[in-house]
Image (cartoon, rainbow, N blue to C red; front, side, top):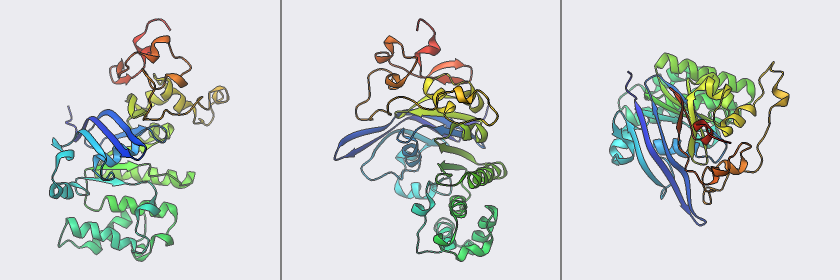
Length: 322
């Protein structure tokens, strides 16, 4: 059995601000094996990006993060600053969503990639490595002298991927890397990430709101709602035969080309996601759930087995009267 390179256990992220305490992530656990791609899906505000930030400890100062993030058995959350600095980019790196917010607008993209190399690998041929990385992600080496505004959205996203790979990390966190890109460019970026994952043997956590995308890219998928994972299992099973009503609604929201039944599928959910500061009792999804039972507002849900390799946080997987 393959030993996981990344183990996340009971991860909790809590923000503190003027409006009070916001529990954004509430007890999330998962594992990621070498060379594996795990998808993480859910609506905006469910806690996906908070998990990404917590893994590398890049969340705003004052954010409370508890649990364990074990990278080869070493807890990232308890690392001292020097050790954490060594681990970032060389062991685990992140591709942020929104390249314009991540790249320095007044520095050439080659200089930004070279900076990471020079910090982590003193004495290395940073210029040569920059050229190699740009060509690896499908950009001519001459684009190193360009500023971010001189590149298209897809090209900037490729630069972010090159930046994340600068120091040969073993774990890559891709936080909605295709946000704000048109469909054709999305497909190109996805194909690029899949090719790099295979060629470099990367373990990748792929975060998006598009469940159909994860079914194409990832072997396993976890669906989040209100700060918790509500279903996890093989991507194809979760997308085509979801056991949790929210995961099923999320999958049905995306059209399948050539599927004559799509017109009859639900295209939305009633209500809005709950305020994390005022979660409803019991299952947090029950106010929006079309198949809620009378006890859904009181029972403490957890991830129960659906099959040998699938779990869902829904009382219906336990059977009994509806």
